[in-house]
Image (cartoon, rainbow, N blue to C red; front, top):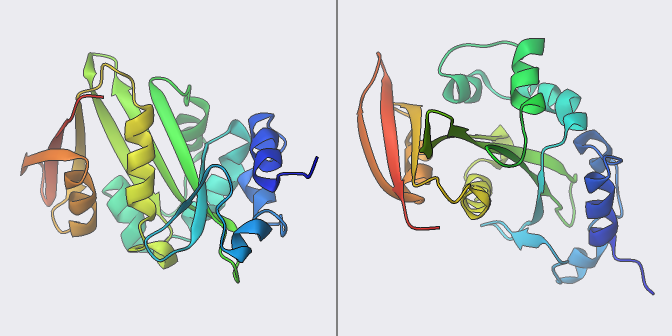
Amino acid sequence: MKPNPATDLTAARAAGRLTLRALTAAPGAARPSRHGHLLPGELLLRDGTPAMIWPLLPTDARALREGFRRLSPESRRHRFLTTIGELSDSMIRSLVDSVDGVAHIALVLIVLPPDGQEGPVGVARLVQDPADPAAADIAVTVADDWQGRGVGTALVSALMQRRPAAVRRLRTAVETGNRASLALLAGAGHLSSSPGHLGVLDVTVELAAA
């Protein structure tokens, strides 16, 4: 039987043998896509770049930290609504170790460009509110060079497909001037907002039935 690179890579990540860091050095991962065919599990971004979405694993902590270091100050501020120079160990534990795939879902988008570097360019997470299971917070981070290409849209769509059945609305905070995030959230459902603290909007998105 002819090996299937997509199946092999997916199995390796599921077994914890393949991290985001290792994937960037897997030169043969997407060769069939270079002939114009999508592998099982692949998707096309807005600009036609093949990509895959996988769950964030505990072994991805180091790659997550390094990816954050490469973000621009503006992208960091959009994500955490404050200026952060480095992800602390406690933040890494919160972002990685608390992921259970049920109430806290975290996904990674890996790009597989035909003539470029393969690797992770976006992370998105959905965290169900334990006090209100019908609500969940959502956060999306996309590498600066890949913003505007459909990475965030693909990640949000994947989160919505995997969200707990009880979740009927998203609640999050967004900088007033962060039009890209507001548009992304509006694409998920009916968006409403109200002023929060200085320069920040409290956003609610009513979702269609799962």
